[in-house]
Image 1 (cartoon, helix red, strand yellow):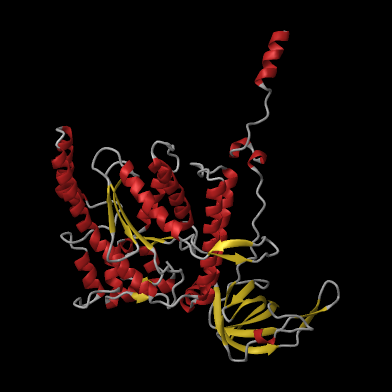
Image 2 (tube, rainbow, N blue to C red):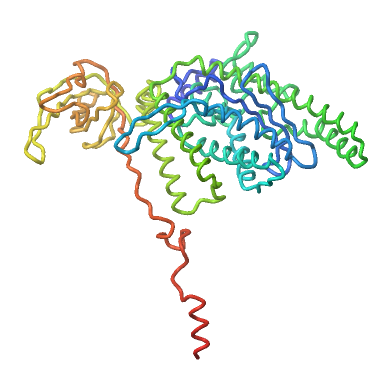
Length: 500
């Protein structure tokens, strides 16, 4: 855990109230997100029990699977609800002009955003998507095609959830933890009720800690899913399940219907507190101002959504159950790229992130002491290159070596190279050369030059990322999913035996 985060967690534990870890919201929030709560039955990981979802905080929709028998009707209804929300995002599009790397194209002006309580629900939806997208389509059953399409979208959304900075599928506890730090352990922060009690306690509570203790009361606490509480299973669910199974064996239709109605009321009562907490958390996060990089990341989200819609319309084959070596390497490279870009943009936007990086030696800050605006170099062709220099005095440790490229929050497109690091009178003098964003000798960009005395924070610049070239599957060795090693063809062996 980073020092500053540890300090804020200790301060929260001392004061009894959560501490702000960011003044800005780093993920986009839709005006109409789809809230989704899920419960699963004990047993198969992907077998659903109930889903509460909707875009209106006052009108949640509860979908219930029967305690025994087929879940197909419930899944078909869930598929219709989720895909209808996704289809609404495809109503309007915009024209994007051609760029050097992409032709002109259209992009949807919106993209789906699903909010769930915790990472465990994301995993449950991933398991459900893995199950549904491979189900066969029966032309006699129109709902089967919708269920398979639901599996495709769940796989897409849960894959997006693995990418740092993506806002397609967000676990609310992780979203809150990005902006507030409680006085409990990170494991306890995975419980939405207690985490939100620390952050936004009721007015009658003396502190967030007291509100969290109240929220933990077994008599009133409701886990946010997808697993239910064991006592709830044994004391309330099990008797209704037994009653339903008994009525089904005895072909008592009215008793089955009555039991399902009781189960519906029970699960609605069980999920309603979490539903209210989700919208409470949404209101808290929506009140935070958006960071500058959030809009760019949402544009990328809309691009990814548009590309996925085109793929579904033109090809639509489900993603394989397991990636081969090349696909896995590409996926890992994309995740690393997304993580580096998200970390760099958060550092540029957020003073708290920059303060954290200063405690780890990945950044330093201090006033500008000297500026050499006339410094030039001779390039490989002999032409003069404008390379202004400046010196920063910092009390922070600077473990970086000369040659390290840095970025500064005041000029995002500029790059600074460390020329020399010199200890002096308890502080450290760092001489920097501006290597990008400063223009040319003929057309200099003087705006990039800071004033003497200006306090700047420099972070390690993300390397210019270029997607590495990966071999095709046919070019990979058989040990990594490629074609088998060379060996005589069976037919040739048979012909040889006949000649003998």
